[in-house]
Image 1: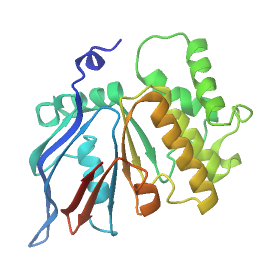
Image 2: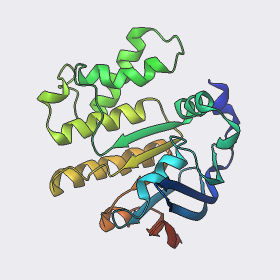
Image 3: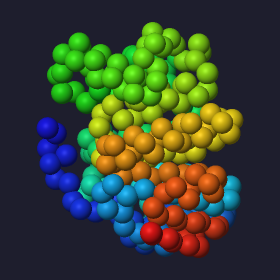
Length: 238
């Protein structure tokens, strides 16, 4: 198993006085200010707030996709500021999965190939047949076992998001980051995808960090962080 996986701490994710500041012309804008919290393994967190409150920026900082102006993030026991870009990428590869509102599937690849891709990128020299079997298992798990060879353009929005879920869980992540995973879906399809997301989350024990504007979806998480104008207005940890 990857050495990065062997160094897990009880705290899967922590933010300490986290902030993000940008310069726009002559103006300095604080997008996020003084965000602090800790999540242990297996917890679920909803980040909620109005548009422009800093939700997606916070998610990017927590996942190491962006760097803070001040404060620290610890992911799986690693302080992200001590890692360069390649180091953060390796840490994400070892520990994290991602689900986005826009699905981010590669259009020229089949559903099976899209799910296989992150497994191939792990670089564990696993035989291709085993990778295909793992990808097939997760597509079966999300109800797409008969759509393996379909490309994204031949799948509905809900089906594409289920492929994205299969892809995210296929690497057995310790933490899953989801940015508005039901935001582009109709209410019925969105509820189905949300049910599947939480079901897989419970089964795998992965920590879940979810950005959403949907209060009903947020209420299903054990912890909630509410942002307003870049500040933490509320923290609830059941």
